Image (tube, rainbow, N blue to C red; front, side, top):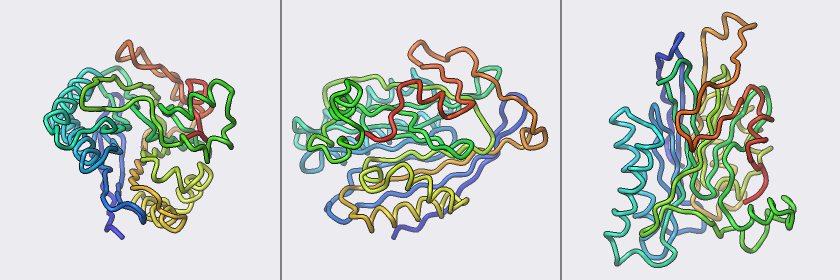
Length: 297
């Protein structure tokens, strides 16, 4: 079992500070020989990539994507534009390894970053593929990202129920990825900042083995992020560990909100980018209206 520790940071934001704490883990699982997952978790960006492809293609794709996004985070300028430039560079990196890039090579990329450039801080999720971002708020768990998969398209069209989707033979077929030739833009969703929020960013190696209810259970049982990711990893392995498993848990505390329980977080401000979907996440149900899905994939 990988050794996991919780990191923390106090972040200045308009009107005060946020206290962030997080932990991440990745594991090969019990049936795969190579771990093609990769992740980066450090303020202000928390992302997971799940590579796919024969030989070492998937490993190269996910590692290249995470390396390029890490450089963006290190530079301190995380925006949709800098993310998309990084992904374009990753596509070139992947294409530069023709010996490892067959037709199925590519990677998902999913995560969240904190934008403090406006009058109020807000979170922005990004997504390509079927890795996921969940938000736990006020005791409810909601999948914020929407899977780019054949199964999700069938569910959205009403041709498949969420229950049928869980064991569908096309469950691993995704419709959008960062690959060696195609440049794709992530979907973005913007969320307000609220005290007590918990984000889970994960590859489908976790969601193949744990339901949304199971994820929430282990979060409820483990207030510390390192304990939470460890408990979820152990459960996913016990349930079969059929794929590589990567999990990041990010906790958000707003000290100002805790001193004024009547403070209204209100809706988010203007979109940072035309491609960013604006969501008032004062309750998780609002995010569900933006096209979230909790069961498919």
